[in-house]
Amino acid sequence: MSQSRGQWSSHMGFILAAAGSAVGLGNLWKFPYIAYENHGGAFVLVYIGAVALVGLPIMIAEIVLGRRSQLSPVGAFLKLTPDRPGHRLWAAPGMLGILAGFVILSYYCVIAGWTLRYILMSVSGQLATMVGDGSFNDFFGAFLADGPQQTLWYTIFMTLTVGVVFFGVKDGIEKVARTLVPLLFVILIALAVYSTTTEGFGRAMTFLFRPNFHELDRGAILEALGHSFFTLSLGMGAMLTYGSYMRRQDSIPKAALAISLLDTAIAILACIIMFSIIFTEDMEVTKSSTILFTTLPQVFFKLPGGSIISGFFYLLVAVAALTSTISLLEVVTSFAIDQLKLARRAAVLLTGGSIYVFGLLSAWSLGASDKLTNFNLIGRDSTVGMLGTLDYLASNWFLPVGGLLIAVFTGWVLSRKASHEEMSDGHGPLPWYNGWQALIRFVAPLVVGAIIVSVILGAEYQ
Ligand code: PHE
Image (cartoon, rainbow, N blue to C red; front, top):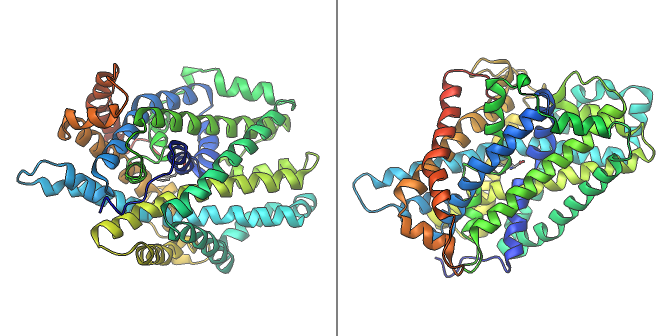
């Protein structure tokens, strides 16, 4: 099996593809809005701490497991567990990862589809017109409730995702990542440089970087921790799967560090861009979760060249989302290839097709179908509707539980010899190997355990 397994053609190929997985709606849509909601400063600091102390060590762990086993999540855990009674139970975190990939991809493509419509509306001038005559205010709600529209954009985005994975590791994913990730970074830097010329830039920087710990409650700390999982694509085997394609001679810690830094930089750049514009216009943000789709366009068109800025911006969001959805589908597809012994193309069509059908439930749960819109499994405001329920289950349960199990497995079940060998391949002795062991054995499980307990106790973790 390992003979026929594809490999990244270079170190940068792996870093760019993994960074493409990490950078997505989590950075550009979710982080700015939760940072805004939680008053910036202190929240941003806790988030950066979570990335460094929990995210980075778990990312190293996932890549170690993937490259060591040369398999996708389920196979990886089974292969790396010593053959003792009950060892097959370690298939559980792998299965949970497949489930998480399945669920997240199904609703993620719905949201990602909106960006395509926004690109089109920007380029055609329709968005400018609507913002100009005020009809934009009613647009978004009506768009969400429009079943055929939701189906259309969702279908297009899912087709793009399936198409890229269909063409295989080297030919598909690497090519896309190679061109699109640097492009995305460049466009973001350009927009951020532009924002330094706006009046609100100073206020945006103060808001983001001056911590005020009185404004930080327990729920915000937990939210920052949880988001570090989602944004780094951790806890469900995405990095594990990509790691299985990584070349032996490349350094895992260096790659993980580069990916975490890039992901964090992009989230911060997105905040600088959005907050600068918001503060320049002195906007009152009533519903922060919609900044990306409802507030931002109104601001774009107060600026010169609004249609161009807006078109570029949503293109950038679409690109970021696509490189994330590719990795989500890759996890489920690799499972079908390795465990069900399917050929790659058959596996892609089977998994992509079933996820597509399942995702229609989310696409129609924003007003198109009453039943799906009012679907209420957990009974809290934010979890109402099929899309809300699935997002709640995936980010509050699947990813943290998966991350906890990955940390415990790598720290306590995988032999020190194995992890040391993977981490030091061709790079001599590692002075900070013991530091990573301490983080993965104690710090990460305890912190993630606290997140899970807080969810069980019903704390405001979302
Ligand atoms: N990290 C991606 C984002 O920030 C989402 C994602 C989560 C992708 C889990 C893969 C696995 O948008």
